[in-house]
Amino acid sequence: MEIEIATIGGYEEVGRQMTAVRAGDDIVIFDMGLNLSKVLIHDNLRTEGMHSLDLIDMGAIPDDRVMSDLEGDVQAIVPSHGHLDHIGAISKLAHRYDAPVVATPFTCELVREEVEDEQKFGFDNDIVEMDAGGTMSIGDHGCELEFVNVTHSIVQAINPVLHTPEGAIVYGLDKRMDHTPVIGDPIDMERFREIGREGNGVLCYIEDCTNANKKGRTPSESVAREHLRDVLYSMEDYDGGIITSTFSSHIARVKSIIEFAREIGRQPILLGRSMEQYSGTARQVGIDFPSDVEMVGYRRSIDQTLERIMNDGKGNFLPIVTGHQGEPRALLTRMARGETPYELDEGDKVVFSARVIPEPTNEGQRYQAEKLLGMQGARVYDDVHVSGHLCQEGHYEMLDALQPQHIIPAHQDLKGFSSYVDLCESEGYRMGRDLHVTRNGNIIELV
Ligand SMILES: [Zn+2]
Image 1 (spheres, rainbow, N blue to C red):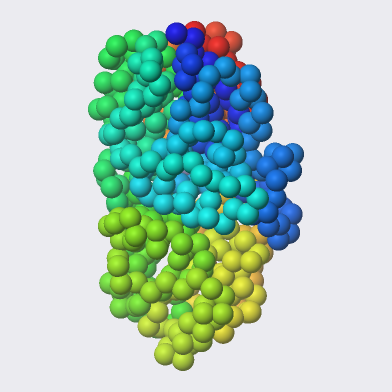
Image 2 (cartoon, rainbow, N blue to C red):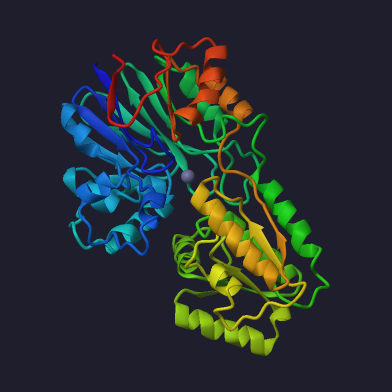
């Protein structure tokens, strides 16, 4: 059976992930993501009514025109998890394919919300839920799709595997190796080891190189949870304002903040549209998440809530807000500029349970937000966080478990691939032979 892999997006950047695998006549697409930074750089750009070709030209969504060079039928569109760089282009591209979107329940719900706002294209693909550990047959030639449970900075992440008669194609974006996650099951390393040894083994492994330049291994989410507990407990006797900010899609982290806020005698309130969206979705699909926490999404209601907090005494509350990257329109930045009823006093605490995404725009905006907070006397606690991506020893362990015949580095630019290439070469792979460093829009023939 002929096997080809089209590396469509996310091979020159972090963002707009999209990869297609053709096995004989059957094609499976992994991810259809958005490069959000290409949208945000244009001030206040509304993408809902935009045509996909304009978004492709901006570099915001994958250029899927290479799909016409793959001869076969798309059988499934499979987002690995619910981050926007993996699902954010579904509303613009999925309608071109007569295939269902197959994902875990939380990811499916985020896809439904994402396509709801779409104004330009009609999305009528089926959305099929499949849990981690589930399998589904693909086409009529013996291919099967399997979801292997992984751990990442969003719940219900999986690595999809396409089993073909020539061996397994393992799509390895995005994960860390967490044996003590705060929500959900540990990463299923046992299954990865089995896949590496059964049948024809792993024909190809496509891997997320985000932290390949970092030594050691990525700590568990339970380490971030303990760090957060330590930071918030240290503030237990403080009776002024405490504000936290984190990734609103990071349900496990938001849950930890809610729990510790209550333990130090404060009422947590989720503020900001994306906070309300992701936490509301988590609650809706039955994820282990506090059901009784107040969530406020819209600006006017947020300002009313902040006014109530000021009147009741801000020492009784712990607002969990959007804006950990200093995004100009996010709530924390508005608070920093003094544009909300919430008043910061000398000694008030702001906890960033996130790291700055190392990109000049983010770094600049975050710097500005922190300076503004500092000018009002706030004390800033940075980087109460662990990454959602594998470091070097995690990558080594994955290669050891899967023993892939071919490797394709992904989820980075060329510079970001280099440390992963070094690791693979030290394990006996060779660039151009079985290690395929590639660009957006290429097709790699494996069999
Ligand atoms: Zn991700």
